[in-house]
Length: 340
DNA sequence: AAGATCACCAACCGCACCTCC
DNA sequence: GGGAGGTGCGGTTGGTGATCT
Image 1 (cartoon, rainbow, N blue to C red):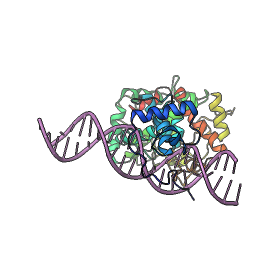
Image 2: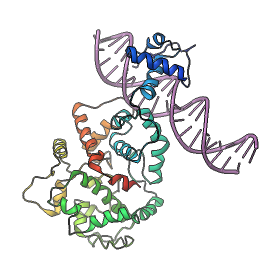
Image 3: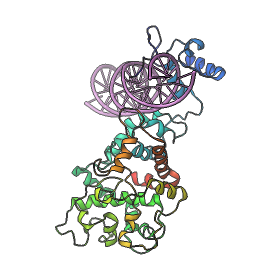
Image 4: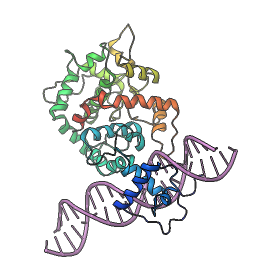
């Protein structure tokens, strides 16, 4: 398989940084003639470079509308979100960031964002929390953050117009549910670090969550399809754990409801104890490759490590749904604040 | 002040896959 | 079906400026 290098004989061809003169030659040639086939282009443009080098220089640096300079916080957040869904599909990630190239995003990921996630205690590959004790300690710091605390208070409040109530019959917004997953899993992590001897007891006190009181039962039901699994679940960052992922909405359902901004559930006889079972989202990243075949399917089609694309048209359709879900227009500033 | 080390990033390389003829 | 050209990607290199000792 494979093919011969684009430049069989690179001896005598210049390598390394481009000079302004070379840039000018390449730019003016492409503006006048288009690039067409890259292989004969350098000769025609009067450049002592290989075609591949010209193509890279053009696509990564010289072509119009390239955005230079530091990434904004919004761009950072978007890259992280997209990477959690798409993996190292830099070109697809770049498609969501106008003016940014896949190479630039890849470099920025490797030099900045990867470290940032590691410092947050998140595995940059799986986007799941690292389970080291020091990360669990860091979570208490996270929960001292007013932003997180406010969100958590909203999550915990059984009254008022909060996320849970929306989810319990007020046509939950799909993006809110995705956010809910994140907060929920933080609490699971805390719970898992403080296991209770009797799982039928009221939830973990989480006494370190100043002012939040104890978990109420509705939270249990959101967090698991059964109480049995609550404390045995392996926490994951943005996905439900294994026993919570038994029944996802269909891809079509997800797409339709996301696009139309409608509730996932259309059931009339609504059982609050299981309301969210029916509205459950697939994890943005699976907590277990073995446990859920649908998630395996997602991952296998989005994080192929050999560089080749195995995406089918339906896969693309599905991914677009997730990409839309994660889009800033739906996510608002939640992720930005949360990651901070 | 100067050398060593680190961080960043543009650019390169090789491979696999895709598209077109 | 097969080859050529183009594209996407992971991994890596090397130059340069910043920071440390």
